[in-house]
Every structure is written in structure tokens, then in C-alpha cells.
Image (cartoon, rainbow, N blue to C red; front, top):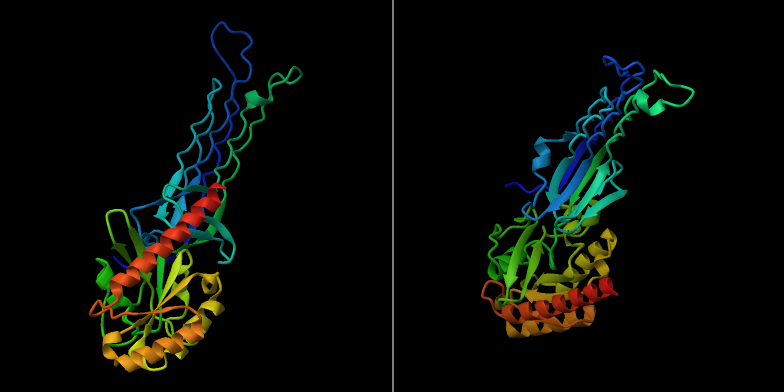
Amino acid sequence: MKFLDQAKIYVRSGDGGDGVTAFRREKYIEFGGPDGGNGGRGGDIIFEAVPNLNTLIDFRYTQHFRARKGGNGAGSDRTGAAAQPVIIKVPIGTQIMDDDRETLLADLDEAGKRVTLCRGGDGGFGNANFKTSTNRAPRRSDKGWPGEERWVWLRLKLIADVGLVGMPNAGKSTFLSVVSAARPKIADYPFTTLHPQLGVVRLSMTEEFVVADIPGLIEGAHEGTGLGDRFLGHVERCAVLLHLIDGAAGDVVDAWRTIRHELTEYGGGLADKPEIIALNKNDAMTPHESSARRRALEKASGTPVMLISAASRQGVPELLRTIQDRVTSIRREEDEAKSS
């Protein structure tokens, strides 16, 4: 299935049904009077987050969603039938943006969460509604109220605990394939990852976390260089950023600063998220090189740096335990903040 994380769609709720002008005419009833019923309510446009979707590819082929009009009223004070709502199912983590792509209308970040984006129009009044003591035979009935319509952008931000960032060829896809059942494309050239990948890491029966791997960043990504920073939105919801650095590439400090600069320029609070730094490809460095580069990176970043080799799994179990403990602690603090 092709990954698609943005889509533009048109939605329109249903118009309300029309009220009618009718009079009661029955044998042996001398004074019938008005009995025109009201129109029914138009259908709503509702978005719902469901857990079994992970892409917006369906909206490439279906881009217009319209709800039905409410039923018209009828004689004998019969109200028209209300139209059924149109329920649009989207992946968890989908944001609904206005046509300007800046105004956030809704954020469906939990399974089962619903939002009514366009309300159906109310039904019009029938002539029975205008009957008074001085106007006993009104001939007025109203049309139904029109529904709402708009163009919206859907933007998917994956729900993950750990965001995997780094330069191209830092070994992110290899790391993801080693620690999870995900099978991303792995090759010895830059930008082998063109779309975000998700992987579930299970340390025990009760401990697991989700890793999101995004295409590599290069200098100037926030200005559109390379694949740009489009996919950084998928790590905005992560609790921790895992910054993988290619230790065998040379200047590891410059590589770390480049990614940090791109995160800061992107915004969205990414630069403020907790960061775990791992110096990858330790098996391709001499002990002296790995020690010197690790010290230089710790001095520049001010945080401990872990040495790993994703290909040989050296240091990977210790890194996963560190990540799990950090994720558990952060999620617990978030739950306590919500409950207080």
C-alpha cells in the first residue's frame, strides 16, 4: 500500500428538507386547518479516527463527500426524515486543516475520536407551525436551511513513542529492521527511505514502544533541500528523539549540529524534545576513533552518547532499555498531568 500523508478533500453537509403547505381535508370534518409538517434535518459530515488505517491513500481516489438532503415535510403534520450522516474514517493522528493549511480545525489523535466538521441544515417549517389565533389558515412554509461546505486538508502525523532522526545513510533503516519486524529498504546510497516507516519494539510481554523512521535530513532541509522537512511532522508526537549518527563518516559533531539546526528551524517543539544520541557503525571504527568521536560528541551536546552497531547488534540491547525507560517515564508524567 502506498503511503500518503496529505490529501485535500471537499465536504458538504446536507440541506434541510422543505416544509410544506397542507390543509386537513376529511369527510365530516368541517374545520380542518393547516397540517403541513416540517422538513427533516440534513446529514452531517463526521470524521472518525480508526485504528486499522495508516495512510490517507483512499482520499487520492475519492475527494468529494456530500451528505444527503433531509426529507420534505408532508401533510398530517408529518415531519420529513432526517438524513444519515456521512462518516469519514481516517487514521489515528490525522489533523484536519482549513484550506489555508494553517488553521487547525480538529486533531483526531485517539482511536474512536469523532468530530462533526459540517452540520446538516435544519429543516424548514411547514404551515402548521405558523398557525395562530388570528391567522388560522397560513399559507406560508419555509425552505430548508442550506448545509455547510468547505475544502479541507488532511494531514497525517504518525503516532509513535520514538522518532528516529539523522543524516542519510546513518543506519536508521538498518536499526529499525534489527529491533522490530519492519522491513524498510536498505541500501548503501542516500535517501533509500522515501516515506516514514513504523516499527514496534517489544522488550518483554509488558514493555513495548513504537519507532517512527523518517527520511534522512541534510543541511537546508527546512528550505526544501533534499526531501525537505515535510516528514518531520511524523515525529512531533513522539516522546523521545533517537538521533543516530554515522560514526564512520568523519565529523560527527558537525553532523549532530546540522540535524539540531534543522529541528530548530522546523519548529513544532522538536528541538525541545528529549534526545538520545547514539553513535552508530562502531564496528567500522577503531577503538581510538570511537572513543575520540564519542568524547567530542558528548562535549558538544552535553549529554551521554551511546556506542552501537546496528548491523552487528553491538550495544543495541542497552540502547533499547534506555529508550524504554525514558519513554515509560515521560508517558507516566503525561498521564499524571492529564489527570491532575
